[in-house]
Amino acid sequence: MRNPVHREREMSRNQYRAAVVRRAGRSHGRQWLLWWSVLGLACLLFVFGQRTASAAEAIDVITVSSGGQHLLKLPQPMLRVAVGSGEVAEAKVLNSRELLLQGNRPGETSLLIWFKGGAAAKNYRLQVNKAAGVPAGEGVSDITLKSSGDLAILGGAPRTMQQHDAARQLAAHAGGDAKAAVLDTTALPYGGEVQIDVRVVEFSRKILKKAGLSLISNKSGFTFGTFAPSSLTKTQLTSSGITGEFTLPISQALNLVVGSASENILGILSVLEGNGFARTLAQPTLVAQSGRTANFLAGGEFPVPVPQALGQTTIQYKPFGIRLDVSPTVLAGDRIALTVEPEVSDLNFENAITINGVAVPSLTTRRAGTSIELGNGESFVIGGLVSQSITKNVNKIPGLGDIPVLGAFFKSISLSREDKELLFIVTPRLVQPLAAGTDLGPLPGEEKANFNPNLWRALLLSDDEENARYTGFSK
Image (cartoon, rainbow, N blue to C red; front, side, top):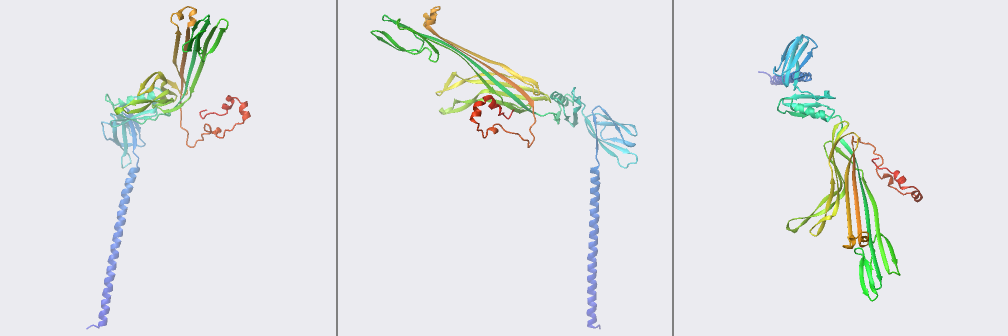
């Protein structure tokens, strides 16, 4: 029998060997796991590198018009050629370095070329566009027409709006009788903002003439008199004769009084002639985009009561005054088409109507409309808006007022004439917005913020000299 001590030592050795074997097994498994991880990562990097190389390889695009030809010169000799779709395009080999491409119909296909000494084929993308002419005139080469399926793509930078419209028409009918869908990617070489400077001048002249005569005579108990309308206010019969109270024939006129105390006769002649004029000036500046409408109104709004159901009344406001609607269209870098519609309206209380006890005036309106094509900065004038009003009133004694020469003593005359003329001066200009951070300078009225003029300076300087020191922002 073995010694117990030897038995215990032998059992300890066996346990140590088993532990070493287990550790070795675990270490070997870890090494295999590490090798498989490295191998998988290498495969992923290889695949990703191949895809990146394929994506980095640029594909050349060759454009040919439908029915046209394109000569492709190659950098090295080729072995063979293949076209993806023969209905879209065909390729004809002229020699080892030249290839003639023929566009058959609009579309897109691929072109493969194998070169000598190369393992892979060179890939090209062949784009066949619709055949379309371009508008005749200057700058035609700036317009391009491409196709993507049934869609016509119009590009380039036409120099005028006429060229742009003609190109759109050609693009719409490039595919045949049926109109094709057109994607317009053109960019006009000029801006679309138009500044319209307008000067509105209204000149009004009034002429007024009035004449009236009042005459009274009282002699030997007999009284005779003729008076202008509304001038005789009171009469009274006394033992000495007839007395009366009367006013001047025309109170605001110049009066000539003639009388004789010995003859008991008094005559008053009223004569008035007045001339006046008024000039109204407005200078608005409007800015509108090409094809949009800008408007201007110098006047106001008057309330109009509108009856509603159940006896209720609402108020609506109607504008009046000087109104202008203008629509610019930019045709080219120096040509602008304008549609101008000026209107002038005044309140007319003579033809007023009454609504629920409220007198609502009518409007006297003058309106015009015109279209014109101008150069950048050119001006045109809208005139001829002239109105004339003549009013004549004759107040007389029937019969006596019709007697030649002597009839002037038995009547009064009032003549009123008013002439109005309206003038519009319109100047369009192409403008660009101010850049960000631009110094605008002094604003209107900024110099008068602390206005405290010297009294003697204000007396010595004329109004024109004083006003010339301060200019508006538009100047």
